[in-house]
Length: 152
Image 1 (cartoon, one colour):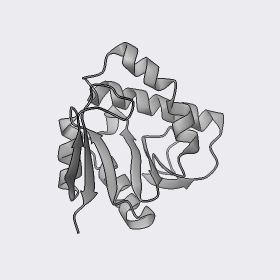
Image 2 (spheres, helix red, strand yellow):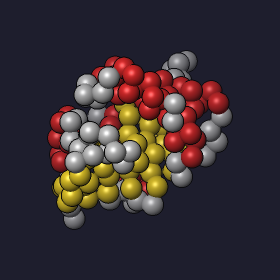
Image 3 (cartoon, helix red, strand yellow):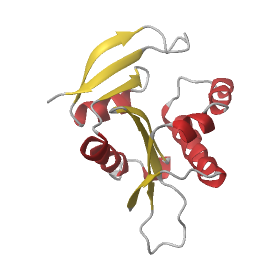
């Protein structure tokens, strides 16, 4: 698999990443309704296009299919997004992305939905610890958030 720090974000790439986002969210964010996912999906293209640092994982260079497998976005050392195509979960894809983010983008903080226990467990396994909890998400929705820092 190939990790690419991506500056150029054309419509085709953003569209492909939104598809990864949606498949990932539907597989992991079971607490969200279809209507909520579709509402959030409206904002996904802008969030992906505007995140300061975007890293995309693709199949190895020999593959004719270069459809993204996963991606992450980072802003000022904060992991803003990390989504993996469900077909590639539990194959080390997320770990490779996060290790790259820690080593090359100074990732040391993130926020995760408390209702996503698999993600929490993954981040804890990667060395992150919770330092704060909120009852609602940033939009005031009924989704508690955990704020995590990399334990040094």
